[in-house]
Amino acid sequence: MIAAVLIFVVMSIHDFLAVNNPVGQGILVVEAWIPEQALAESARIFNSRHYRYFVVVGGPILGMSTNSNHPASYVDLATERLEKLGFDTKKLVKISVPGVSFGRRTLTSATAVEHWLSSSEIGVCCVDVVTVGVHARKSWILFRHALGDRYRIGIIAGPEVPYDRRFWFFSTEGIWTVVRNLAGYVYAKVWILRIPRAPSQQEPRRGGLTYWSCGIVRGFMWRTVEVS
Image (tube, rainbow, N blue to C red):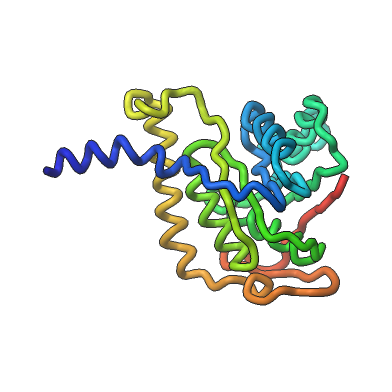
């Protein structure tokens, strides 16, 4: 009996984490760190559905100097890749977030998107989030937590790392990726229940620019929002 349960968990956990449940309208938010193949797929999804804005959000690329010829942030890298794909940058919104520790990046990005939505007063009903593979379940719950109940939040798991998702447990990379993201999901699921939502997530805000404080990021958050 125990063996049967373990086999069922192993066979189903990948699909549970790599969830797909898009709304198909409103705003498409893309985590800027996703690989080029997934970014190209997100551009195709945007052009084939009823979205108003394509939002890329992310932080700095670690170890990359500002004096380098390479993009210093994932947002700049994603923008460069989208331009090469011929994407219409007039519909592109770039949200840069500061560098934070590894386990806090997704919630920091989600909170920055919530802040942009509140301060820009864009009237939309829905937000779809694009990430990659088994990171999807974690991204979904963190964006739902940050954006609150004012929006319908969907999730899209883009193309993932090169291993057979059906037999991920036969691949070293598959085992590492699934176990790491499962741990991240459980940690986020348990931890965020103890974090009160920021005031801007509990009540709609109108007016000028405001600063916020979230459970994982205390004080002011420096951000750059740029609409192409």
